[in-house]
Amino acid sequence: MPTAYNRDFKYEYIRVALITTPINNGEYFYSPYKFQTNHNDVKVPDQNPIYIPVQAHPGNDWTMK
Image 1 (tube, rainbow, N blue to C red):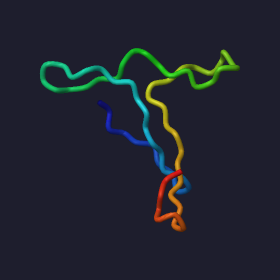
Image 2: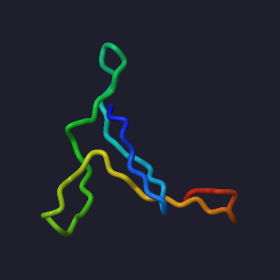
Image 3: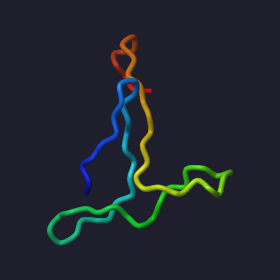
């Protein structure tokens, strides 16, 4: 699986991906199926993986929400 990861200074991201079951050598691959990220605009392409921004809050023991 690719190891590149999106980062910026404001948010951390959780990468959500559909992957295959393990192949003979234990490797995983991205599934050809994709997530529908927008249900209203047909021009927005489906994606796999998707990245969901999260923030950790110091007041909540750095719990991500």
